[in-house]
Length: 218
Image (cartoon, rainbow, N blue to C red):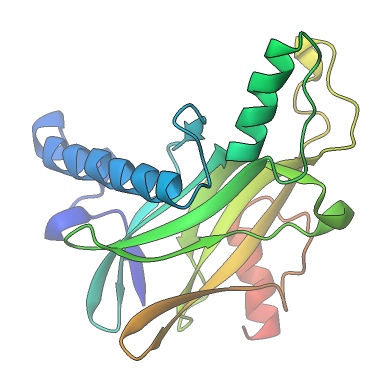
């Protein structure tokens, strides 16, 4: 499996291109985002007003089993959390931060923007009382491994919320997860594998995660 940000067979990564060269890729990614949003709405995972944070670090082109795929890793506010925000506003009360109200997910499309697979990242810490609020990186796993590494941030929903702007982020936790790519009957299968990195872990970045995976031979 190979992973890069060189779309459409270009010799340069997306962030190295001029705007004129980047525009077709930008349009492709916007169409990709619309497809993802429609899928999340269809499954009831979000509402029409749910916040989706695409970020600047969660996109890549992958080649797996001689097929081209396009990956997006991002975080979003779930439908359940969005409805809680709306209800708390109507009732003029402070909103409740719900376990799982913020989620991080990996979506994979083929070159024609057909959905190939998706996987919501599992954060079981605190009896799943977590709120995923950011994807900070996406990279390849160790050499010879069919998978990607996603670094993310989250916080525990029973934490006391920050009262001052300068305190935002102090209670955030960081970890990196391995998501393996497989194929069954021609269909792409995504699996979160925590056997080596652990879950939770405090691995903030992809290079550190690769070193741990090398030690495990994963």
